[in-house]
Length: 226
Image (tube, rainbow, N blue to C red; front, side):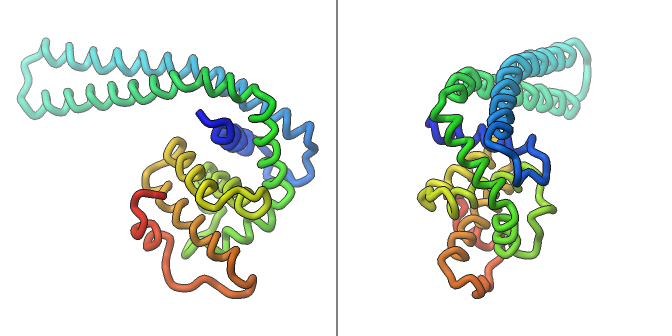
C-alpha cells in the first residue's frame, strides 16, 4: 500500500465523521477524527472476518440442505447460485480483512496522518468554494444529492487539484480507486467524469461555462475509469 493512498482513505473516513459546518475546526480536533478513523478500521478487521465466516457457513449450509432434499433443477440452481454469491461476498471481505492490518499500521505513521490532516484542512477551509466548483461541474445533478461517500471523494480530489498541488492524473486515479472500494462501478465512472471536467473548469476563465457533454457521456469515452 502506498502511504499517500492510505492518507487519502484515512481522510475520507475522517471526513465522513465531521459535522457539516466544520470549516472552523482546529487542527487538534481534526487530528482526533483521524485517530477515531484508525480505531474504526481496527474494529473493521474483526468484523470483516466474522462476517466472512458467517457468509461462508450460510453458503455451505445452503448447499448441504439442497443435497438433502429432493427438488427440481430450477430450485437447485437458484440455491447453488445463492451459495456461490454468499461465498464470493465472504472472499471479498476476507480480502479486505487481509489488507486492514497493514492499513492500520501505516495509518498510525506520522507522515500518513500528516498528509491526511493536510487534506482535511484543505477541504474544511475551502468547503464552500469546493462545493461551488463541483456544482458547476456536475451536469444535470447536484452535489448534495449524491451519496455522502461520493460527495466526500469528490471534495478530497478537488482539494488536491486546487489547493494541495497534486498532479491531475494522480488525484483523479486515486479518487477512482477510492470509489471502487467504497461505492459501485457506475459511481467510479461518474466520479472520473466529474473530475476530468473539474480540471477543465480549473484551466478555463472562471466565468466561462463548460458546455455540451454530460458526466455519463464523458465516462463512456473513458470506460477504464483512468
